[in-house]
Image 1 (tube, rainbow, N blue to C red):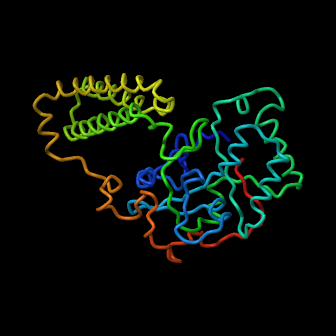
Image 2: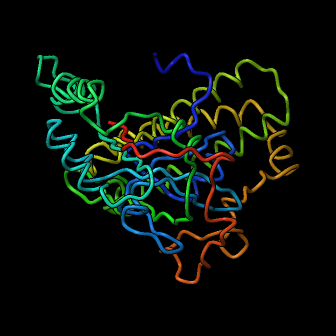
Image 3: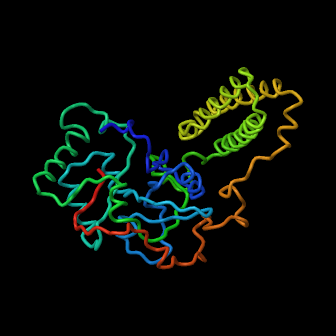
Amino acid sequence: GHLLWRTRFNGFWPPEMGFDMRLIPHLKKAGYRYVMVDCEYVDPVGQMSWQELRYRPHIAEYGGEQIVIVVRDRELSDAQLAGMDYGWFYHELHERTKWCDFPPLVTTATDGDNGGWFRNVTEKSNFWTWFYHQAMEEIRAGHSSMRPIFITEYLDRFGAHGQVTVRRGAWNTDEHHGWDFHQWQGSWAQRDTLVRIHDISREYHAMAQAIARANDPNPELARVMSEAHWHLLRAETSCNLYWGEAWIHKSHADLDNVAWHLGEARAILGGRLTLLMTSEPPAETEAEASPKTRKGIDINDAPDDVPEATPADETFTPSEKAQASTKSVIP
């Protein structure tokens, strides 16, 4: 079925697979059950085998909130992006999971809107007609132990096991490993742009909260704030920073527009703005609190003094755990 009929999405796939544990409280607030992250950044809190760490969902905690971590296999994902045949993939899958004493969840995630492999419409020259169709035929014929499964179904049947921390980073790009978002903030110009994005975003949201408290029905005020919001979202576009310094002017152009529309909003509000801005300061979320006051696990370099998870915390399984021996994979 088509994805868009759904009214609820249990999982979050971060753009460019970029993840920071400070996202966890916000993702939970938005109703997400799990998030997919790259295997390179996942570190166990307790003892885990290589297979357990990569092919089992886990729990990560930040700011007093927990979320399920689904681990992306980087090497298999790279192969998927470049183009692979079913025979090679099945052999590799078997070798990687043969020592698993649990139903492994093998997940791949790649950029699907670039390159000929996913977009090529020629028969037997793309992911669907060269790899996927043969994989499904082999499974239906009973020749393969691989089984496609939705992540939510896997979690309902087998749960998540063990506690992990996740270092900040994104998936690998053509130029960079992905660690610490270097692709997006590797130069001073990129970092200066990010600082300006944060500053103007903070200014916009403070004013939006003040206007919400005022309950002002002025349609012109609503229009200029809507324009400011649209330009702010566009300024935050990943590609503006991804391409080094070539596109950062696009972010600055949109940020100039945000500043202009906020100025229009100030003019409409006049003297009321000062009262509104000081009457009730924006509430600081726990996720935005300083590390000294924040509860839970701090993400900075996965501190060595994090205690091992207790048995009560270490395993999060359904009340009736299903037994299975099939290989599980999301192609």
